[in-house]
Image (cartoon, rainbow, N blue to C red):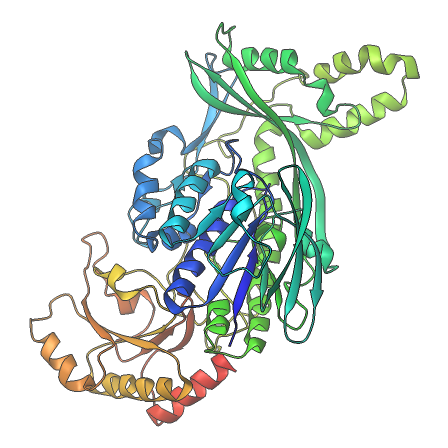
Length: 595
């Protein structure tokens, strides 16, 4: 048994890393707390950032937050109105003329057809506060730098969040991991050795954990450099201004407070008397993936931006929960890399295409960033050295005013949004391939939106369908078997219960009844599944806009069955009934999944 595990959580600096990763950590701690596994968290920063960033929360993250005691609803009710953030608007200034707009949302994004929750707009620093409150609700004790004199140097008891602790070395053996962390107490430098069975590095794009174990990143660096200018005005409100800059002709020092205020005035279209520039921070856009996600005999695991600069949506470490709880051998962690790394590589390519597609708009306005870089380099090569300091800024700004092309209707219109909302599918790992549906190669991304098509193919995310969904998934690591109220399906459910007991895993059976079912279903399922009680009867709810049954939406009949993993990805599916012995088939399935 694992005595306790250390999750190293250091500050993250890329889009969506903290919402994704901290949400994962809190969800895992929610599960592990209920099952007695001891955990601790290290945070390098002495305090969480208050700089607005990483504002977009996707469906998958919101689905995780939905399980955390109403967190998703709290986010939804606190976010700005959708009309304020659904579009990219291209204009000469906030008070000037509008050139065009692109609506990145579609009606189905808010109809809760493919997911029980919608995407959200909620800045990372606000989310951090809510997640910290969730940790405290789990009886985690937060040790801040000013209060760490009460933290002795002995072994951690579990349930601690240590602020101001930086991992400086890792020593791995066959049995455990020893992480050495530095921290300051009353001005005195101190080190602490922490023993754990599993270390999860979620410490962002510049991951210390990744560097300490020698894992390299592969991909494209320095796609773009930007300044994030956080400012406030009583007249306008609170804003973040993202300004691209181009080294070596420009550097961060060129953008002092006075220059930033002038940029803000140009953005607004007039001078403001009450402008307050709160913070100026540079950041770099990359598109890279770690060469591997696990190391040291599956004891060190990378997640979030530590594993990929452009974080894929989903995953959320349910396989780790299976290992921590003793359900599966540690070798199953290899399937985490098998599943997530191809998705990370695909999403990195997708991010590059999204970036290029987004740049098509300023390029059509005569503001092509790639062309600007090339022109400025060529220009500076031909100028005497003394010209650089005097004229480089004037030459540079001149290139921003070279003409403004007419935007075509094919580029700026409400029906052709940029980006992609397609949910990922695992093609290998802890899934049993369906030869009729599995496709070995992911379709190359184009940078244009691709709508999610519901599917029950193994490796896909489970389509959302019914009322009472929140009752199906509890704070437990368990598989879900979805069947219709047919005798053959009840036989399969009984076989699943028997085999699950042999494998010492938990299985919940969901009996999905048609929308026109009578009140007899409770007695019928009870009779068919006794003595087992871990099942739920659910009546399908059909919307007038989509009268099809859930089974047909999944492109299968109600004689089929679906086995869903704890992370809500489909592990196994039979679309028209099991033609083998149910016990033998379920034994084969769980053997293949759990190893």
